[in-house]
Length: 420
Image (tube, rainbow, N blue to C red; front, top):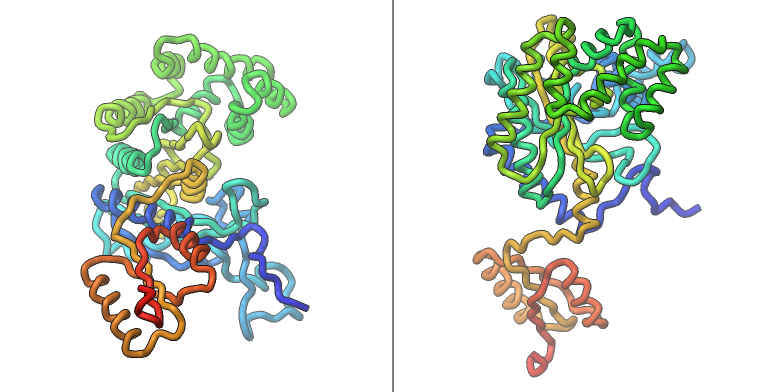
C-alpha cells in the first residue's frame, strides 16, 4: 500500500510563496517588537501534563495532544487511568510555557521582563478556515510591571506592527474582568454563577440582547436580575459617554481605581498611536481563558469577521508555580489569520535583494561551468540573490515558475557559446 502524501488532518504543508510571506511578517514582528524592548525567548514544544492541565487554559485543556510515557515508565498492564499512561503534552498556547520559563529563570532575568515568543502550538480542534491543529502563535508579554504601562506598551507595540503590515481601520476592543464581575454583582446574579453568565454574554455579537435574555432565562436566572443586567447595555448604547454611564451605575460595586486605570489606557493609546485603528471599550468582551485577572483586549479586523488576536492581565499565574504572585500581562497576534488575510488581499512582499536566475544547459563543459558558478559567487558577494539551476527542456514554463518566486532577471548559458 502506498504511503499517504497528504498531511495529517488539521495540519498543512506550506508552499514557497506563503513561506516567503511568513518569513517577511516574522521579520517585521521581530524588528518592531524589538524597538519596544521585547526580548526573544524560546520554550520546548512539550510541557509537563500537570502544567497543561492545571485549569488555567479554559476549553483548550480539552484539546491537548497528550504524549505517552516511554520505555519502562509505560506499563499498559498495570495502568489504571490516564495518569499512569501520560506524562507530557504538546503546548496549546505560549503563555503557560512562558510562565513556567519565568518561574524557573526569574533570578536571571531583568524586572520588568519583556518577552517575545514565536512558535507552533497544537490543539486537537475541529479544523476550519484560519484554524488548524498546528499553528503559529506570536506573543509579547511583560512580567513584573503592576501598572497599566504594561497594557499601553503591549497595545501600542501590537498595533504599530499591524500598521506596518498594511492593516488599517481595525479595532482594539478592551474591557476588564473586574467590570464584568461588578456588572453581574450589580444585577444580583449569585457569585457562583458568574462564569455561566459570562459564557452567555460572550455570545452577544451572535445572538443579540434578546438571545442573551433567552439563554439566561433558560439557565434559571431570575427575570429581574436579567432585566437589570441588560438595562446596563441598553443604557450604554444611548448614552453620550457609555463608559462613564456604566461606571456611574456601578458605583459601590466597582472600585474607582479600575475605572480610572482603564480610562487611562484608552486615553494614552489614542493620544500616542502610530497606526490607523480605534480603541473601544466593549463591556461584552469576556475572553475565555480562566487565568485573566484584570484588563482584557482583542483585535477585531472587519475583513475577517472575528478576533485576530487578544490578551490581557494574568497576575495570579506565576504564583501557581512559585507561591508568590507576579504581575503579568500579554498580547498575542493571530498569526495564521493575519497571514490568511494578507494572502487573500494579494499582499506582495517588498523586493529586498535583487534576484537573478542562472540557467545552465546540460552539457556545458566543466571549465565553463566553474566560471559560471564563480560569476554567481561574485554577484552574491554584492548582495544579489542568485539561483543556479539546470535549464529545463520547457524553458518557458521554467521561467514562469521562477517569475512567481520573484526572479525577474535571467542569465542563460549554453554548451554552444554561439547561442548565448
